Image 1 (cartoon, rainbow, N blue to C red):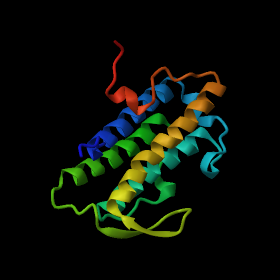
Image 2: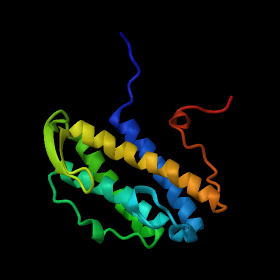
Image 3: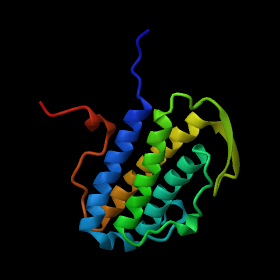
Image 4: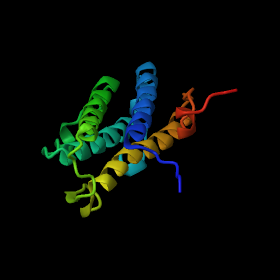
Length: 165
């Protein structure tokens, strides 16, 4: 049976493209970082952005066998700080994906900030890291619109491969 498959590289590309749009929007509207936000236990959009990029980086580091950067060390005062962290995490993921010897089916144990200690395959943690940010970016879009800034790009995965006729 021939089934459609979303590759890891395609998932990384969607995550990275989405982050690129948010970087551009936040650079044009940096005041959004101070907007109140109650998603994921944070107080501002800047803190939500920190949560997004920190989770991604910390999963990438642990999957790479490196110690996770302390959450508090991840800056969120400017779009440049936030998206430097995003780029660092994406780069680590791309290096892992390029390694043919990397065992994505191996189970590993991670200590998370909110869910405690979890055991899952590396693949599961990777997919979570990629989709976690996408989910929060959708929440962020609502907050931005409520504060007068409407993102001007289609956010659905559909637009990674579709075009208007």
